[in-house]
Image 1: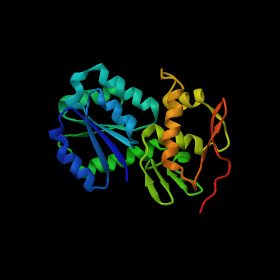
Image 2: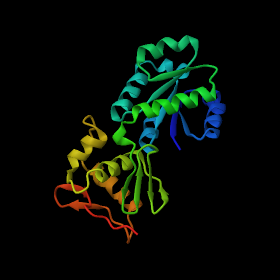
Image 3: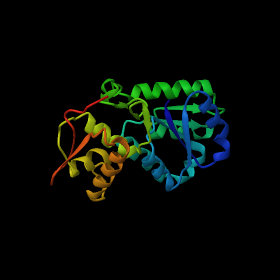
Image 4: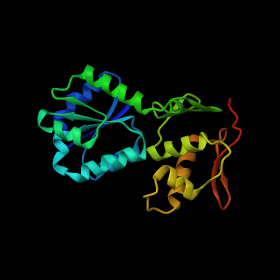
Length: 227
């Protein structure tokens, strides 16, 4: 199931669209464009973003800066939902695709799936399996012994980075740069907090995956036992 973030400033006008996308197999999270939209992005892994252009266009440059920052963080397709009066904004701001109102669900579903496939590099769509832990990069899902785990976006990105580099030691600074980006101003304690939360979700008396390298940082175990 693909996770979709829908950004709008008029929730009532997209309720039917959200219900329709759910019927077509998408998990759709809608949020009002405001300060909490950044928290939404940090709290969940999304495969694509839909933007109700007409409703957020009054925010001007702040909205476009947020979407540019989002796309720098990961290759995430952003699709605009437009009316004839806002079509020019799509051409100016460089969205991957757009759908004109009235929105047709079949068309929108096809465009979402195409955009996701085009922004997923061949080496990114391979399932990562380490012992009893399975990471699905296409759906941004993690399972342990077949049980789906509820990870935040940053926890997922940390896990994927470590698991695809088994045995490699990452300093806290390197993890900050890779997962949070060079423009992040928080301290390296952020890494420790997220690693602790990640361990609480993926490890138990039977399963341990992440090693602490004293005075340096963290690494994913070279060998991990599975059942």
